[in-house]
Image (tube, rainbow, N blue to C red; front, side):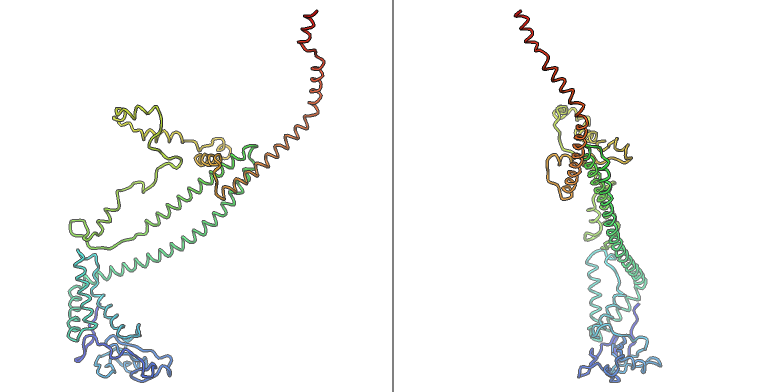
Length: 441
């Protein structure tokens, strides 16, 4: 609360300092009362009293005000000062120190907020009145200072309950701001820790997937290495997509839970609309309620087109009597595409063997089409292709080596049979020749 300063018969409400400098003509800091130099006393401190803002060293304060209140030792100042009111100045210029203290005292009394006014004009008039009163207290003549001081005390007396209520609300708002800043700092620290941990887990997961892919490729049947690698890559892409979507949802939830509030003008009674485009315009721009929370329900395996060429549907396109009862071609397209792609990502045989859900067939088909079309892949895809090529080359060499060994084992038993068949064919007379000899006979 505001306290009326102690005045003498010759002083005003708040006296201005006669000098804002604590240095002597030689440029050295010196106490105006005891003339002690800082050069002689390094621990000397200068103190001021808000009653008159005259600076004294700490030794003079202890000496003059030890036994109770006393008059200011400055010549011409008749203020009665108390020792407990002395403090160290914040600013080097005592005029600035005095103005800051006056503004702080006025702000403690005139503490209304913008949301307590119905229109902007009333709020601006209130601010102008407060600033004019502050200027009278700081720079006004003694008569203006006395009038401003009287007005300040009257306002404080008539609006005491409102001032206390606004003071409690301000303290609560400042405490909420401090908690919010602390929570944001803690959340930022937690995000950094989570990012570092996620990066480390991602590295370990890549190593584990690499080892698992090599083990799967080693156990794959002959001629199935490319298919196994294709399925594995599709499964990895599906897991990465799910992880990225989960991270995006977490970021959106964190952004929505910030609790940002914007204060504005007070709503007019009964109208429900804020003057000057306040909260009402914000509610109007928020859009309709979305029960899915802006969740995209479109399929990621295909993109539904506006029209598909199908002779079966030509009649429905030309004749409106098909659509008059509610038949919708787009609904037919959506259902047909859903049924066409349903179950394509399920490999029943693989699930029976491994007990794991199959990969996304859309990713597998897309990757197969890219490989068949010879499109250029990224560095990771090119490395994977080279690895698959090397594995396929090794498997092919092993298959050729096994076929050659099997052929060498079967060759001795097959050679005599071939020679015997050739000898029989040489000894057997040609049918045409025998027939001609019989006819000639």
